[in-house]
Length: 219
View (cartoon, rainbow, N blue to C red):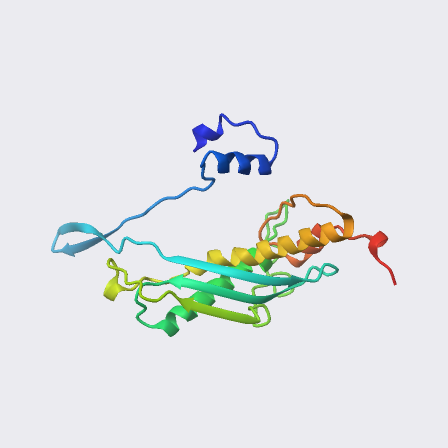
């Protein structure tokens, strides 16, 4: 991919996206890791064949609402579909999905880490300035579905490990807030342009991205 991109001269991200689409060029990296089983018997290390080699798939649709004056947002609804094979315990898998999603919300929206530029001391080390998600930050309407009739031939009793794959789904909340900001800028200023964002897309960054000033405010 890098060798092909080196031959491309584009001025904007939109141009790069258009070029990639027309030339079937992916813009992401992927790697597979095989887990090997091993046994230690007496003084001999025995290595067997790869096992538990599979992927866990999840998809989510996220709807948020943003207050463009303050930058605060609410997650109005989230729908998640997860492929966990033949679930050994659906309640446990759903709980893992919820926990992973909320962990991701902190990463993408609230948990900003700041350091002193001179001493390197962490500045966000208290509850006033480091903000992990709480009970008021979870989706108002949250629907999680496990994909049925999808046994995993490589898993234990046809199941899949859940872990925290749903962390990545939380990026949808950041992107939904970004789209809301872009919509507000178009309505207020007639601007329809790309807005770069970084994670976490905090309340402050959200509010500043709108670009509201006194000219658009009235009593």
